[in-house]
Image 1 (tube, rainbow, N blue to C red):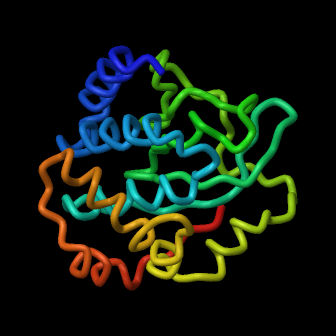
Image 2 (cartoon, rainbow, N blue to C red):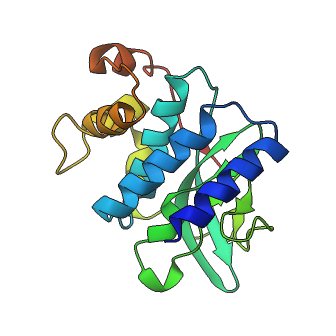
Image 3 (cartoon, one colour):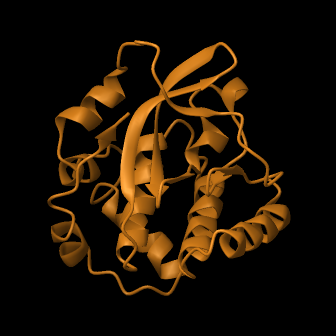
Length: 186
């Protein structure tokens, strides 16, 4: 991943889209964490973590799950939306490496700042995979609590990335503040 290019494009896209100051650095910190930890195929987790980090800084974001399409390839995926724009870190490390793409920030390809070649919310009638079933049939807090292989579910990842951003995050308070959150299905 070309982090210097991504950082510059995040800054430029944030300015062009008049985005809140917290959005760019938070996205960037999580993108670096995901790359370092090789969070491959973790779109629901990465989307959930970004959602919690941004909401803890006062941004109203929307968790979205649905189909993603490029060329003839369609798969189930999750991403975050803010003011109708797509923010997708996990597309950089998909479950199938040959489908990896450039991260998407404010609905733009983070490498080129041009339109993304992904079609978000595509509807092919593809059956839900087992992970999408989990997302659709649990509350957001249950999903974050039950993430396998993570102490304290995914909340501790929120805290780790939050620490990089110098955010003071109380896991109990942040967990309680998301009790009503649900995924939007597209």
